[in-house]
Image (cartoon, rainbow, N blue to C red; front, side):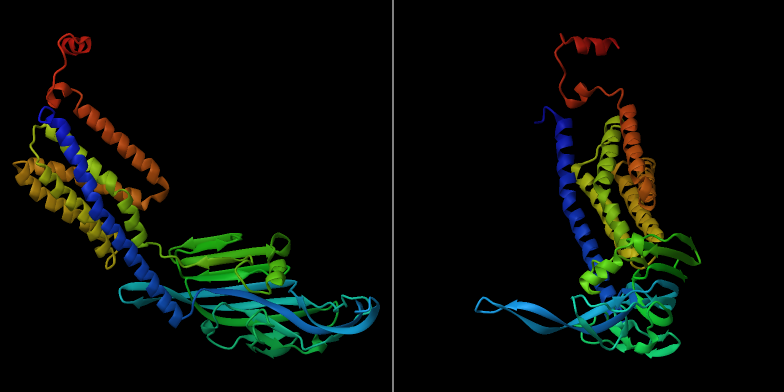
Length: 453
């Protein structure tokens, strides 16, 4: 093996890079663990405050009893008629519903983890058009029960006060609805049956004060749904099945407006099929995402760690040949350990300061450490500062990739192309046969051509 010293060096460096994957994997495990801890902190705050909220309704809910005659077979093979009564429900959706919402945010801390919560005020207006309940069976007779108006929020703990509702000029007393087996939504109020006249519009208003965590959503159950919301959060994320028709986002906050007709949504059919429960009902929402998720950004940084180590080792290896430096494999290992430690420093610092300052501090600390170390390894400040300067440039490119996620592929490709071009330029005059420690036969025409060149 001593016959090929360069090959031996390449193999040793390759083994060292594989060994460095072990602590790098441990750093990634720490990132996942801290991210899970942050998720646990968010869940704890949500349990004490209120979780994500989705507003559903209001809808008119009318139980009724239908009595009809049906023919049944007897044991003797004959038929007879019997009178049967069945409990049924009629549901009427609003023909129009306009929601105007205002959202205010606050940061709660669970240990070192910040959790964004919100309080919101919703002013809802609209109208129902009542239609008489027709019997489903021939010769059926319908007896109406107590009509109720139902509405729902995902987490009742988020109610800051009793919802104030007015229907047809009458104030309604909103309270927990009937048992979940019968009522599809958790809140309800009895309605005077005399208010519901067939074919006439019945206006309603509703005011809600609601607290929650993370996300606020709506289910468009009316024939015509409009929702307008404004808030001081500068980084909203609009999701669900419908995007807002218009939105404005600035450093001071955001405004958004949805307009969803029932012709473009299946919410009414899904509500009837799932009885208002489950996750299958279409809707839309706004989420208060963290604009600088330090765990997501640090995890993205570690995805480039292998490339970072390979590029650094390649730079040292090429300059070792070109400048005739002598770097021991153990020194390569020390340099690689400093590169891996950068990501752990980045994670720990970013939990306490802004990500950009954490990145700057971690990169300067590692670059300074390597500059001091390489001064002794390479025999002077000039080569030490040269290599640490290359590392600073790599850190800068990596930061650019992290903050520009849409252009990450292009920037990474340009970086690799630039490194390859630099290596090819720096080694264009290297006699690889001589460096490898083995010369080709004198009769080799390629060798004669190279010597002539």
